[in-house]
Length: 120
Image (cartoon, rainbow, N blue to C red; front, top):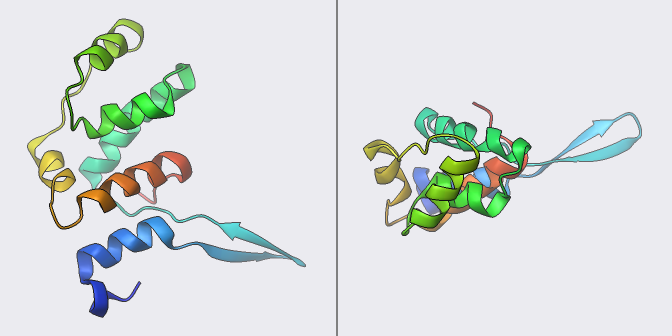
């Protein structure tokens, strides 16, 4: 994405969300989804909750637990009952998540990372 137009933070977020590419495999073309390049503390939080999706945690609840940006008592209690201890977000994660200039982009980046993975 054009860093000059959007600035480095928004440009990186847009690339993490929308940067699809095409891989040539013999005579066929294969779409390659974006790979989110996120800070390590974000990747660690995503990976912690993602592991429980294989045990039955829904995408929606996993996404909510990662972001933890609204009252979550019921979801947290259910998570702890069926899976593991809830890990509260770090101050570093909260600052990243709540950056007013790119908050909605960061939410989309988490969704893309949950669906397609990260490069970290």
